[in-house]
Image (cartoon, rainbow, N blue to C red; front, side, top):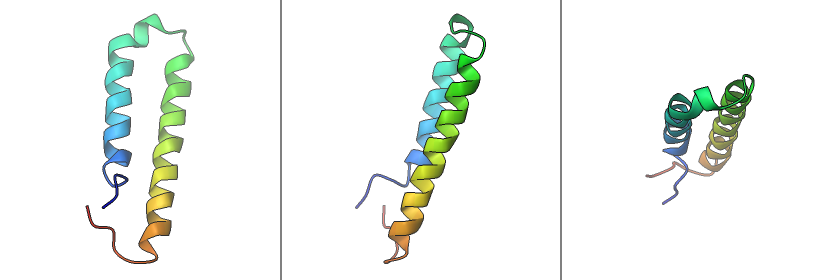
Length: 60
């Protein structure tokens, strides 16, 4: 069993909640940069899952 399948969904949701709570306290460009980095991280996790799924199905 691997912990990768929920990460592309749970990670951005967690970061979105944090940005919603603390976004006003951050500098103007910081929420945009954080959102872009979160999207790139989710893409990397999806790519890792795609590579692992080539060997066989992922079971969660």
